[in-house]
Image (cartoon, rainbow, N blue to C red):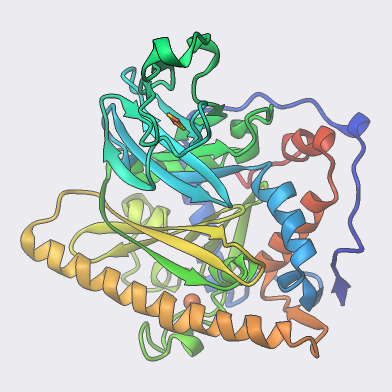
Length: 423
Ligand code: FES
Ligand SMILES: [Fe+2]
């Protein structure tokens, strides 16, 4: 049985850091997407899934230890690119969203040049939120405390009662920008203004596959935020098909697949079930596989996102953005429900029903279970939890968490430069 835990980290030295590889921005070819699905088809044909070498055990305290939680915030959430929202939420210049992500107050706004920028949501005067939490559209950002104003690009242009206040160098007092990348219809930012980590390199080519969803042209249909347990309990669930026919028997039903194959681009993993519908008589030929076949499964983005597709009132996807809460036993998940096309009234009704079902499934089945799991682990009597050979995705996930906790800042970029993609 393999073990992982806070005590077993491997520290990479800066001098081992490999050179960053050039990163292609081209969408993955259809041929490569087909190849990824062929693996799921082959698993169905063979009636076998690739298994991890061993059952892994993980110390239960990784879910409950407040000190560990602080390290995860610092070494994972404050160092790695996080998804702020989908481009669909901020389509036009001046559209903004202010939110707290992993404890950091941030403000994403589309500039007059069409570029997305993400700032620390703290006014250079005395640190008030320049935009109140929520979404809006603004020609200029005006701080609600004393009325200083900023352009959509974060430049300070107005100091209230400037003569009385005294002279300051406006150019040196803009909003603090965070490293930002908009790609595949998603907006990433790093919560460290000084970070030099390449978001592209971090994505390890995963964005080239994600582009095939076409999210850049989709629209935001609805969203909500759901409280949950420790972020890793929630993320374990993203990678877990094993529970589907059991925990969700009353909603999705007992026919749901429970076996999974995992494909990894660096720390990011796509989860597919063996593609039984692609084998046997009447199965669609490869040449007819469309986006719903090619992009099937759950696409996770380390360390906090899960994307799943649905067909209800048109093609839709739920993007779950997980953020750690104020303490180790708390997280919040914002579910963005995106649709490929503007739905008709009838389609919108069906999409609303689907989203309501997903709300129930996640809130009442997944997270209620997770919150009780959190409480049971916090009791402390159970020292370990297990991930089976069929739960390779979670084994990989926990491996990455440990590796990140034991990697210093100098070696961080090297971790991702060394990663490969499955195609
Ligand atoms: S804190 Fe923003 S204007 Fe004073
Ligand atoms: Fe679930």
